[in-house]
Length: 221
Ligand code: 5RP
Image (tube, rainbow, N blue to C red; front, top):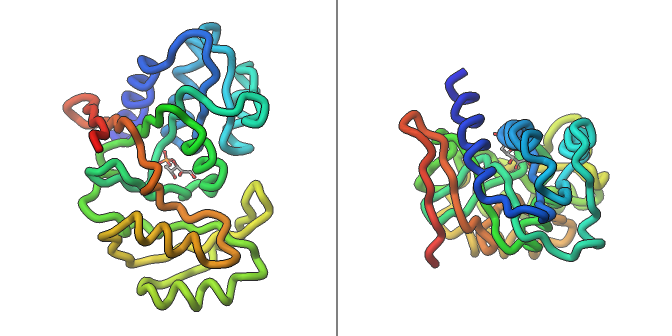
């Protein structure tokens, strides 16, 4: 219950970063659902949104926010999304909600990326949350063999097909001390579509919902 209140307050705080008459990128997940709920109140101020998943698209359609294709607009001034884990360098694990590929595209195509989380998502070292990797189904056995060499234990996520028709492998028990290197290594495996490490393109601003209010951390590097 308390976690939901923290998600709600941090989602609401993100509204302050929206400039009038812009098209914003919107992520996926329960924190983002609270963001969309809050956005409903000021939706007349924006032109619309680029969505990161079919579930976000459904919610945006329901409240009448116009949806744009990223190819129509090229980039977005602001991208707002949650995370499964975030470290003090504003690098993240994402993909718990299966939408990592479109989320990563939007993060890359955004001028400013604001990550919104409750305080339970902050970690020193990424990897306690199983690292999601979207892969082409044919490459599954090969990729699991390669991932085992990195340590950790890989499991195919059951009964899941992504919006892109692919499957997800979750890698358990990793200690990711060098997220940029790990992202590069996994990205280079043939058959990997996206690894849910958002390390090279990290968040620009992290908003954290805490029991003492919303904390703001700015990326300085
Ligand atoms: C979806 C994601 C979400 O941002 C992540 O899973 C966090 O979700 P929630 O806000 O429900 O805790 O990466 O692919």
